[in-house]
Image (cartoon, one colour):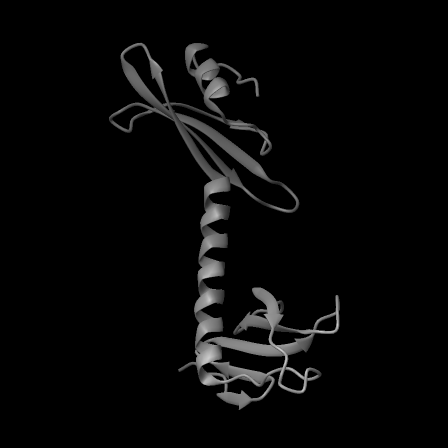
Amino acid sequence: MTDLPDKTQEPRLWRNDGWTAQVIKNEDDDGWAVAMTPDGASEPALTGPWTMGRDKKNPKPLDGNAFSTLVKTAREFVRRSEQQLHAALHQSINVAQGSVRVTVCLDITPDDDNPSALLSARDEGDEVLAQMRVPPNFQLNRATALKWVEGGFGRPVG
């Protein structure tokens, strides 16, 4: 059984539903910001502006509706960030080789010490035609994919 974090509902700190919302002083100006941090994370996933209270000095207190909206926004932001990362690490382009359509894929494995990438080509039946390691900064585009396919899958230039 996993211990769930306590539910907290304070004017500047809410914790529930796997997220913590904390109202903080905005370092860039006289205003306030809210940081949304998923449980277990050391850094916020999203930080955004927060509304001033009626006294124009202190922040508006968090409430249930605001917290729900913040959680929804933060989850969507994380989801989109994950999709963008996946798209950057797994690219594919379709090119024609004669009458056959070939899908050229670049799959990057990020690593602080030893990043790598695999370039592969598959036919319409998803059979692997060729694959080879390339530098992780290899630029896959229509021109480089076509050159590689038309060159018989030799060492790509890109």
